Image 1 (cartoon, rainbow over the protein chains, first blue to last red):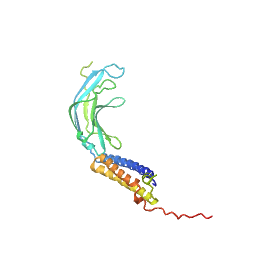
Image 2 (cartoon, rainbow over the protein chains, first blue to last red):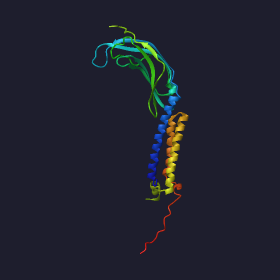
Image 3 (tube, each protein chain N blue to C red):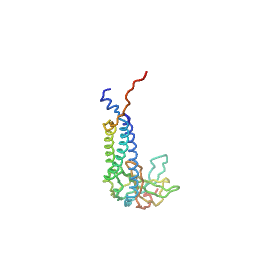
Length: 180
Length: 86
């Protein structure tokens, strides 16, 4: 620490150390906060209508017509408690899960990015899904599905966390409108 | 080099002053980190954490890096010059 430049180097070196420890403290504290002090928000999902139609696949060389499913839904959710002091934004999505072979299917039908606490109260009615569902077999065969709201909390400092609402809405894929 | 250049660029301080500058760095910045964390968690605004830290870091920079008189209170006492015996 004899000369000015030695002091600058030593001082700045300790500044970086303090910054790293501060970031670690913020990260750990927000994990604890989310785990113990934030209640999982209440969500209510209601499938208004679900429409299954035939269509041509828009990818690949398979020209066989297959079933596409597009739904309308209501969604009520208050996600404001998820905004802690370290939350930058939330990625919220409605996921439909239904059985399949060899693995069960999980398809996102609607999503949104919530950037502030003021926008975190979701109240959607008769909303058309962003994405249609199509199955790998090309047919739904009247399978049962469940719809749930899931989210990915993105912090300023720390790790991404995934969680989901406890509410599930069950629905059944109808037979296609024009069976051919 | 002129005296001003020596003072600002070289900025020599004595041994006790070096130890003091080291302790000031350690304690000042540790306290800055704790205060910045508390400010953020109490106000619920993470940008205040970084502003608080930036404020402390700039203040500490002035305190530690410049050769203040309190770093020069214990100058080395050199032995008196002796003439070599023939």
